[in-house]
Length: 544
Ligand code: SF4
Image (cartoon, rainbow, N blue to C red; front, side, top):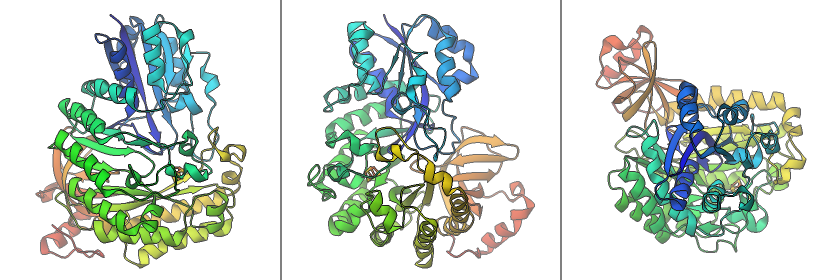
């Protein structure tokens, strides 16, 4: 019987997150590939944090294994609370810790190398080839499957990619049970689900920095296959699902995909998908989406609104439609083939607000837009930063809600048009970039946090992840959950309701609800007294 060890070094890509509490498709599909090749194989799953915490346990198990698969890669680096992604050093140290198994490196770091941070070139993958028997720039699960069937690395094509979902659908269902070994299982584990691959804008070349259009034709998974995977995940205890692995949720099985740049949303297909998911997993606590192209909404207003209403019917509140504006400068948009205008994106923000800003049972608006910027793109000048700022000021002025603004520097990836330009522009504009980021954090974010989470809002079912002295860190389940600093005596593993007392740029100061006044620090006592009297002093009214 084969013993295989999977080390999950975590992934973060534009369409897919795998840092705890999220579990991405990589470890699940790989486990599924192993069990598809050999039903009775023993598959042991380690997160990289588990390896760090117990290196000897890892060494003991992996040295007896036939196969060691290391997966990971951060393409869009962020700050993480739930785990720390694998470092370039660990990528080379791990295989040296064990002798015996065949060692395969998969995931974005095997495809692109490792991105240290935005604005810098990635470390090329060939640097890892000396440490592994196989580095797989293609789909890791296909390579693992082929290897286990043939028992010969020479017969494996490391560049192979799927042309359809027939094998993946099988791997996804069989591999779902690996989540039972995840440290967050039974608590806040959130499974990222793939609905389609590629970007509909591939027909016009796509954005200059993005890898998705290089995949060519868009291929979609059918709703029944997705539901079968969700059903298995649910059976193994997953209660939070994010339909996040796609370029634009609204173009799932849309009319004109692979023919038009902006296909027309199909509310019927979206309903079929969501209904099937709900039937497969009736008591989900979170069902969210991720990416949406705002131009789909601007170009197909009626169908998009219809599709958003369908989404609201089936999802859970607190959902986020992350919009890739990337730049509010029309010159940058044109030079990088972004295919959008700031006016259209602003209109999409208004429309999502119109249908999605009502609050649901967990205290959060049903669905809000997020806005992504990418800095360091060709065509960028000092005035680009003014335009970006004006765009956000307009949002503030109109009283609109945005869940979060994500500002990142371009990470030039091999295979994209921006690769030849590199990080030159980001380096040249370093000071403007830092100034813009500071403004977003200190001005925009602070005001927006007060609007989205007014003082007095009660946030239901927050999962306590850590404690630091007298304060606990807790988040709800779902897409871009806000971080709560909870001033109360609570322990990791608890699920609590909190009430908002105050705001930081990216997080909230809260206390457990119902309130025990003695646990609230003196500096927030005034806020608490105001809440008790029913006046909060913020720009929106509270709900406590
Ligand atoms: S719209 Fe642009 S950034 Fe988004 S997936 Fe397509 S090519 Fe990539």
